[in-house]
Length: 88
Image (cartoon, rainbow, N blue to C red; front, side):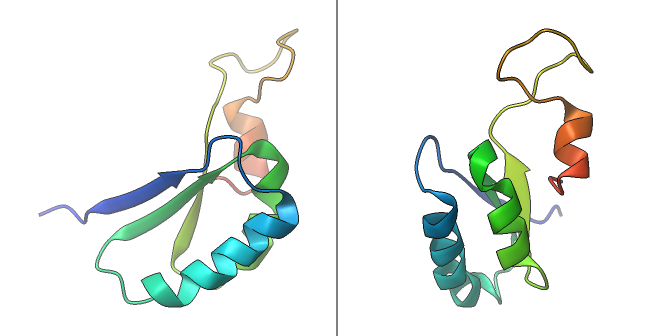
């Protein structure tokens, strides 16, 4: 049987500081979860949340990824960019 996934997509909510604070509150609540816990944060929050979830059972996701590796796609992020930033 597959392990359930609990994922939250934050849409356009939380500044980096607010995102860190929310994840700090979330960590003890999900530390014993019998599911894979994923937070899909706005791009601006990726590095702050990556730092805050280090050593926890929370995984980092992205809200959006462009299908091209590179190019003139204003505001888009490639899978390689997200992976290097720590998004799983």
